[in-house]
Length: 269
Image (cartoon, rainbow, N blue to C red; front, side):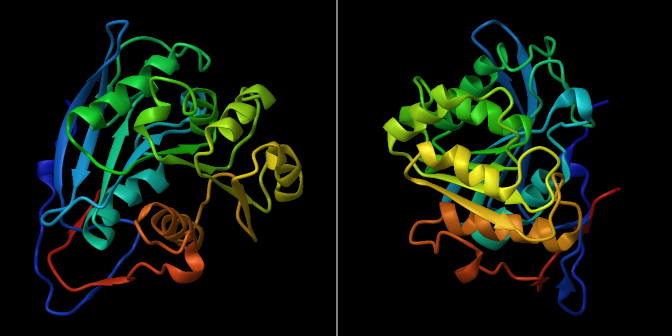
């Protein structure tokens, strides 16, 4: 049975709530289905601000599904729990072809990042069709490969502002793709854990030097999976600083609230 985001039970605490990993803040959440041009149905969720304008839209691309990645990978889950309320940001999460989660399983089978091009295109087109503004790709691990390989070419490039990469391994994405990003001129922000298993900050600086507008940010103490509230919070601050109009471009001037004075729900672990 597919998880229903309407099942969250909100209550009003008597005092402000410290935001923790399982804290869910108010938003308009709905299960959605994306349809690819080769006929697959991809399951996902869209979380929108409960009221007011949508200031930016995150189209999230999850880690490798053959190694446990899916739309509920924890940084994306926390983004959907917090960013609509704290920053007015819409968060679109979905399972790429053949990937399953509590939301359900997307049709198709894993295609090593090749067929997934159509998944990226379907997600971006969904956001366009819904009128969601200021659209950004956010890739994590395998998701960074999809963002790099397909985000700077059409039909995606003209519909997104840029991309934010979390823990890029640069296994599938090559210098050809990086040069496409360079030619596009679109912003590319790259968050690289100091202790990453695949690509660490010094090498990342060298690899991404081919993209003049890329900003590589090394994060001390972090690992590939960004485990720990300290690191997940840093990622969310960096994302918000990049995508909001007039934002600081990074966490130095962006600090999301760590308490919420309003209704809250608790997600199941």
